[in-house]
Amino acid sequence: MEPAEREEVVHRCIEMLDDILGDTTVPRNLRRSTGELKDQLLNGEESLAMRVASVISDFDELSSNPNTPAHTRAQIWSIVSKLETISGED
Image (cartoon, rainbow, N blue to C red; front, side, top):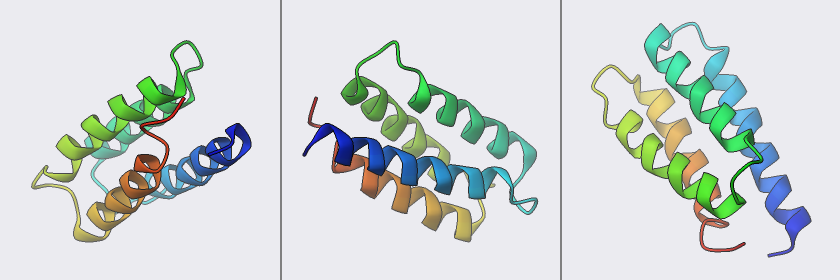
């Protein structure tokens, strides 16, 4: 996958994260965690592959939280699915 394609995938995931952050039906602590994951994904200090792998791991934990609404869990799985397309590259 080309670097531009990877950045496009990250951009789409950031937009999806913004949707979760703006959803007032999502508990505040989950929105805060989502914001931290967004910041982690945008952090340019590590390689993209490292950031993606770390975010995927953290999202797995977040999606198994019993307080996560079903529609948010589906959004998280969609984000993880997109990120997995680039996790092994870099």
